[in-house]
Image 1: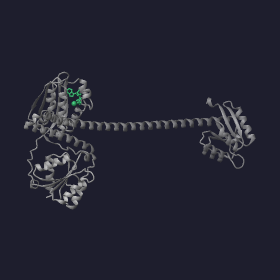
Image 2: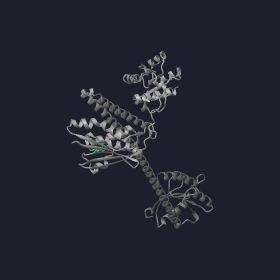
Image 3: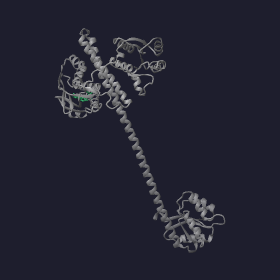
Length: 534
Ligand code: ADP
Ligand code: MG
């Protein structure tokens, strides 16, 4: 208590004798050096309390007529101060003193039994109370402070977590977009490769068989690319379980992948003066359930990696083998192989050892595809010797080929079809498709023309593009259905529509067919709408 042994005390007392006695006892104290400021009116008390730094205040309970020490006590307490206040009262006023205690006074002293010892005891008690109140307050403040910083830490943690989740999402999106671009590019490179071959060596065009084979490969590559774009859609709309999984022959997939990549490992390699030999060991294996385009993408990625790993040439071997309930697909090469470090990271997205040439996405795309097919991937590699990638996919008992369905008569006869499409290329393609099957075709280049022709003629079927300036396919369909409710209408939608991800089926059409439209899908669509219209 040494720091408080010098005390500044305010005494509010209107009786000069009592004030004198108080000063005397205070001066006599050996425990404290008390400096007493004495005032006798409430106004003076207010003024002093406003400016002065006191350690204690003593208030006489009775101050003149109107104002009492209790009033001053109330005022002081109302300011929120923690100044200890002790009431002074005469005998018979205990009731008022109890009141004072209730209102926050620290103590009260009876004037008649007042002396130096009582004063000291009371001061000590008040100061102790004051000190423990201060300590409580400090502890409370500290607790509040701790709470506040905990709260801040929690907020900070939440913000970081949100940020992390956001970054993860962004990363997934970038990966997805890059993966799609990557696969799309691979498909394009096949198409470009074959067209280049044919254009650079026009004599090849005389070899009908070869040209047909190239065209077939180009078609496969293009429809793989279309499937890649369809995959984008799954990102906008939740994909149905096992969407588009069909029974596929692993051996056929391997053969197709080899053919699709042929320009790269055969012509490119020959152009660079190296030779890449391709061997296949394809055993009799069961079917797998899968997405054809994805499995093509998986195999072409592995083949490209092998080709890139053999800059001096070498042998690439593709194997299929049946293993308990699984089909093993293996792509191995006699290339440069991988160090342990590279092998550990080669599946990571964006990991590449090919500096500018690599995207580092091939194997991460492969891994994604393998996962979606409930398969496993295993990579064995030795630097300077070569690499083997083993993929195992669950096998599927081949479903009995559900022989071609008996085709309803309706679509086999010659039909009269109105095609409404604003783009020249697709419009002509549809016309050719339909004419190939012996149908009669009328075309229109926009919705208004389409409607005019529809009203002027008679058609079994209307095929209309959706996105056309001014007069959309949906509007045209709605008017047609209003006039002739049973008229079959097929609506064509492009990539753009798919991206809208609205997912709503326009009410006025019988079927929505997404572009690009192949002859088979067009036939299938026509069969469907005509059969249901009968
Ligand atoms: P990219 O081919 O664009 O580099 P990938 O994901 O396809 O990306 O491959 C990642 C890395 O894995 C390659 O950069 C290469 O270091 C290594 N790698 C993949 N396949 C082979 C292989 N067959 N032989 C040697 N290294 C390979
Ligand atoms: Mg690669």
